[in-house]
Amino acid sequence: MLDEKVAGRLPVLGESMPSLEVKENAVTVGRDELPALLRALKEDPELAFNYLTNLTATDLGDRITVVYHLVSFIYGYQLTVGCDIPRDDPRIPSVMEIYRGADWQERETYDLLGVIFEGRDLARILLHDGFEGYPLRKDFTWAGGRD
Amino acid sequence: MITGTDLRDRLEHDIKTDRYVLNMGPQHPATHGVFRVVLTLDGEVIVNAEAVCGYLHRGIEKLAEARTYTQVIPYTDRMDYLAAMLNNLGYVQTLEKMMGVEVPERAEYIRVICAELTRIASHLISVGTYSIEIGGITGFFYCLRDREKILDLIEMISGSRMTVSYMRVGGVSEDLPAEFLPQVKKLMKELPAAFDEYDGLITGNEIFQARTKFVGVLNPETAINYSASGPMLRASGVNWDLRKARPYSVYDRFDFEVPLGRNGDCFDRFRMRILEMRQSVRIIEQALEGLPEGPFMGKAPKVIKPPVGEMYHEIEGARGILGYYLVSDGSPKPYRMHVRRPSFINLGLLSELCRGWKLADVVAILGSVDIVLGEVDC
Image 1 (tube, helix red, strand yellow):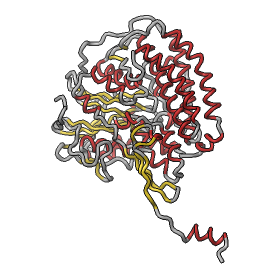
Image 2 (cartoon, helix red, strand yellow):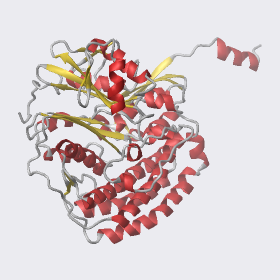
Image 3 (cartoon, helix red, strand yellow):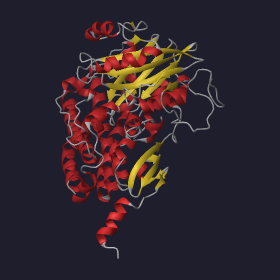
Image 4 (tube, one colour):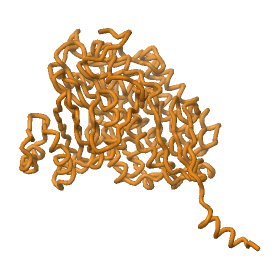
């Protein structure tokens, strides 16, 4: 559940962001407005989401959802920001400039799901450079797999 | 004729040094596993340290998708294999949160005891190996001597020293054996004296301090910006321990402190672990005191089928924030599992920490981050 203060403040921050949707326990935003939203959440003195704790993505078949879990160390708030991107055009702006901790997590998400984070150098991090495909995509199969 | 002053002047201004690349690992004792650092050096000074990981990547997140929720528990043991109980705990709590399963009091207390025992065992490895990396071989054996006693206790509970798979959705797999309580109480009496011993042997050692104090300094702003967590974050003076900040299980019932560092250097990061072990002993003693009678397993369905949706849940692991992100499509298998591994994210700071320090400091800095490659690579 969203904290009341966070839920109350979000529409104010999102006035200029038509793609922002406040849901029961998360917010979703379009990829073009994602960096602006995260920057606003981080810099807003009433929310101060200064810590990106987790960044990952899920292949939902028709689209990929990238999720950002934010924490405010000052107020203790938590917030999940989701961003849907098309599966055949998996581009999303990098948020490394806002949260430096996104660096390795973006690389990991690129490595395993093929999400292209734009505006930064991307290299595989867990798999070797010559690996073909993105294993956490649902259509990935491999010899010896259970499916 | 060239005088000494001239020569120094020329060395400083006219003679240019070449950068060179030095490879460290993947087989190197100080990397705690299979991990490689590609160092770019200017003389002895580190210009860049590129971390290369993935040698131990087993694709646990993918494997989980083809297994039932209960079958994933043994896989969590194999991520941070030095603190398997904590990995179990984070995973089952995420499922309990999704399904609204109540955990009986006794199980919560047993979980806290196990979690803190594991935290001590894990920190003992960290403290011991750090000592050996700085050059004090004896310290390592003292730490492992005491860790073995904890592993004996854990084996008594779960049948396994390290890969425990002890926790279940709704509780724990078995009740504590009768011989466990007297032994754990005895050990909790002995441990503070052992910590004093490490302080005398390692912390107080002049060479150890010279090698670690004011080396690899991490300021609080950088630590937060880089998403550092655990002892690494707290050594920089940031008070963020999930057991206090967002208490889970029954941690709100215990009286303990969150140790904080002042300088954010290697020494503080090392020191955090000894101080945290002392607090863990306090928690275990209180949990043993208040351990209620009752069932060790709650009412959980036989087949774990969380409702459609997603859940992200975090606990304070031994190395920092351990988070599980689960997506359910209503089937008995996880649609997607992602684990926020604290060592993986803390390791992202390595280059930042090493830059500008000397080659000899790399091992000191890497050791102070305290990584477990099973977790980094997942």
